[in-house]
Amino acid sequence: MRLILLGAPGAGKGTVAKLLTSVDGSVQISTGDILRAAVKAGTELGKKAEAAMKAGELVSDDLIMGIMGERLLEDDCKAGFLLDGFPRTIPQAEALKVLLTKLNIELDAAVNLDVPRDVILDRLTTRRTCVDCGAIYNVKSSPCKVEGVCDVDGCGGNVVQRDDETEEAISKRLDVFNEQTAPLVGFYKGEDMLLDINATSSDAVVDAIKAKVGI
Ligand code: AMP
Image (cartoon, rainbow, N blue to C red; front, side, top):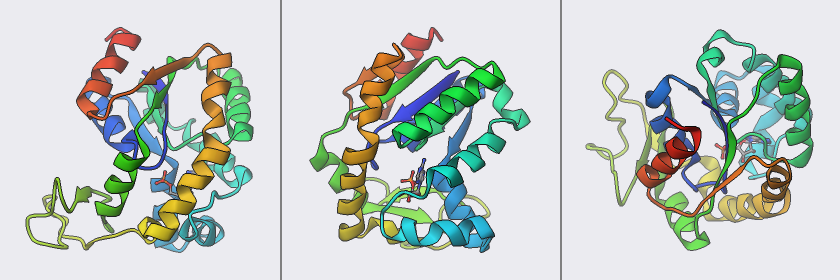
């Protein structure tokens, strides 16, 4: 399947994308994960993105389109892809439309995960991430077996609160989402591609998506 996953930070895009990859082999493409890996590796891309990410702001559309223009050409995308955290602005959505037309690729839907703000705030302030493999934990609902140590076989990395998941950065990210990303719902409605889902359980979201895509 080929989907865009829209939703505020903490809406569950990453969790839903991970569940969907096992349905038909579609690959999860998270621009946030790509950028975090670049920051960690100290690449040019990472250096350009780091300050904006720490502040909870968006990195430039040009940088993101450079990443995605290359990523969508990779072989693993042929089985389908789940765009997690991209597009995030109207110019990115317009550039994606042009890119997909050029590549002759049609999307199944843009899925809007609509989750109440209090649920989002609670999820983000309690979320913890492994700095090595990116596994996600939650101090309340799914803590690590040993505090601060990743459970994933062969990983054992440090599990920490992301720099952009302090209360200040979260509040900034939600403002940025409301201003710059929320208008994409209208954009994809206009393209007749929108699938609105009001569910907080990831399994219910996955079922609604499977029904829409016909799997
Ligand atoms: P995420 O893990 O998707 O919440 O992304 C973490 C951070 O990476 C965001 O707060 C932005 O600074 C940056 N980022 C990720 N995806 C994009 C995008 N499509 N456009 C601009 N910035 C992005």
